[in-house]
Length: 491
Ligand code: ADP
Ligand code: MG
Image 1 (tube, rainbow, N blue to C red):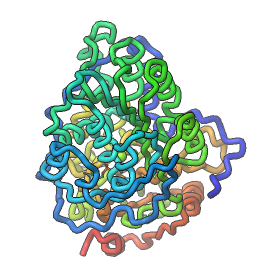
Image 2: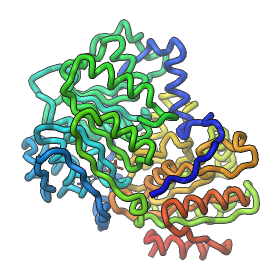
Image 3: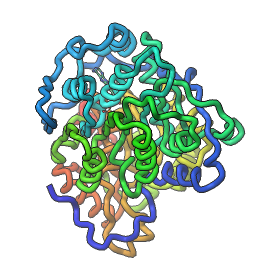
Image 4: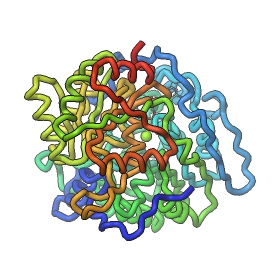
């Protein structure tokens, strides 16, 4: 599998996750680095009423996950949660709270590797929406000694939204275990206590973002001597040079200084060759296990991909308004991805001016607003959410059936390509698509394509994943209806 040619690319001035990366950078480069605090997410529980669990699901991950195991430890895939020798409290959490019936493929394969001695490090790749959170949450909850009140499990995620989501799932899943947890994400200045002044963390599981975690560890407020397990969610982003590599490595090094037996788990749906090699080096000192999926098998067949060619940018708004909103209401919630904060603001205003109820989220908003917007969307109070790539990864909302790429995700900002071809951000594209079709549900993606550059970019994406993205040709509601029917969203 060859990576797209990257000969003399323009400087990577924009991070593919511009919003969050900026925010974290700001946080560490200003005196805000001293400020941290934890968040009470108790009121943010996911509203189960809104989850349509009754839909029949396809197997979310029917393609092959190849295992590379170290040493001679035999790992057999589990077909039931009972086979994993989980505690009765965790089994109750899985069945009663989560309402899960049996492990998904990645859960069946990875959990024996995570839970059984010698607790080797693991690099695990599996499709978007296939249940990776459960793998590492069960790993953390199982490995913690409930009688020891000290941090024993850490999970680091690239965005506050993902850290909050993951801790909500952990608390729900671990409801009967009595295991304590804390969410370590940046807080608004007015609510935060300087890290120097805060009490040390006692919670047994800590989930947070890299800047905050790094500060807590540096200022000795988060002890690492009792750590048994360290998880990186969206690990490729966490280890990418233009992502959070520096913070992640600092955290790993700090832990290694005081603790030689901490198990490291790296989870993501995407590991490009560069990051894959780097990840192998990170855990490479010790014998470790790997689970990988072929690139061609990554594109989710459950989510139908379309393109709509528009003559100019303004027509994108017409398409959204006249066709997608017209039908979208009947098919669940929609996320519209844009590339920049400005784009988010502009589109939000345009749609609100037209009388539509939409919300938008981007990294420049203050944290209270960000949390509120996500909560409203998760509770089903809002139907359409405009988002920068801050929600491209990890965000799990089963009712999202439609994803609109208002702009395609690019590796470099247009102003730095100097008329050269645009290089798509393949990983971000895949992650955006993966916001629909969670756990094998149906979904559709509409790529709004304007001009030759966009067309070229999209065909690169098609080539990279070996998929064909069908055009929705004529502009009538009927055509979009046909597309949504084909995607299994309308009958
Ligand atoms: P990933 O991190 O792999 O993209 P998530 O862990 O967010 O996926 O899981 C996607 C969805 O699938 C979540 O809504 C989760 O509750 C659901 N899910 C996970 N595992 C199971 C299971 N074993 N049975 C039923 N639903 C599951
Ligand atoms: Mg995930």
